[in-house]
Length: 238
Length: 192
Image (cartoon, rainbow over the protein chains, first blue to last red):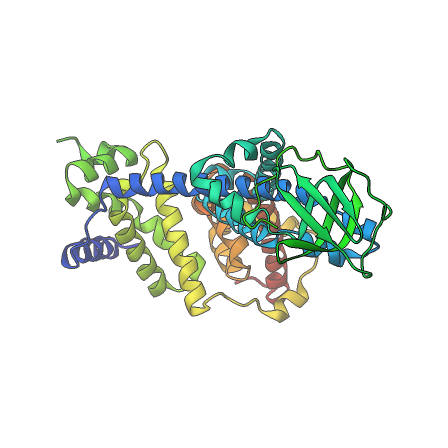
């Protein structure tokens, strides 16, 4: 390249910097960017871990595949019981986290697919472990998230507890939260474990809450009653 | 005032951003030629390459305080130019398309001629001609390796890809170059 051409580029660059008033971005701009990156990354993964923890709790409460005991089969019932909104937000949080992770230098020095897989597995196990060590029991009493636990976790059309009274086409039970719930049924009900209930027996009923009672579609004796140890208090008593 | 010409790139950058911004002129002077050639090999157009390099230098100036002086400045500035060049290709679809007739002639015949050509004085011209025919994902690492004498680690930093991927693309790129060379040799067996 000729001397003139070299001078030409240098001159053009320096002239443009001066004419357009190009200034160097201040150092705090980059420090701020780094801080935001760390915060965003942390926030994304904390959200993802928390939601996986909630999903784990929810699946323990709802007892996956229990629908099979009520004679229903196929993937449909299981897909219906999956907490899709949590799942969706958790996936978005993980993707956001991975996107931010890509901004770091180490992410391109290694195979990013492996980094992503390790991250996803870590998030999954962290969430499940968080649930199993009883974090939700602590969080449910923590004021900022107490409302979340009361609003979001219950509301499924089921109730479980110990039988207090047995009558024709109805029973009264006491839930683990100490509330008394009446369960009614008609001819369209399913009894996978039989229709004779005894006092003190643990049962689980599915149906529609109506006028302060649960109109049951199915009642089963429950060996899962003591799992999980934590049951959130329902926001809407039966 | 230190002797500007004797400063290492990273020391010069530190000096420019903390003491005398006018000395950015020296940074531009040190890199413009190499970067212009690199950009030209990527975009295959001299004027476009010149614009790309100018814009890259302006961008680098604005972000100079974000450069970590413990890293290599050359990788950083090459990275900016590479991004600008790729953006230009995407905007204008200036990516070269491979001559289909040439590809039809590609074969895995003896590579003696190619290996020899890589060693002789005509290497640069030969590579330049053949380089235009291969896709940009191979062209960039091969170009950085052969023309800019960058190590695999530096190429990894510039193109932001793992060293393994650099190795794979180099291998594939060299193979494509060889095939293009052989095809060109068949088209024009008497040289020139």
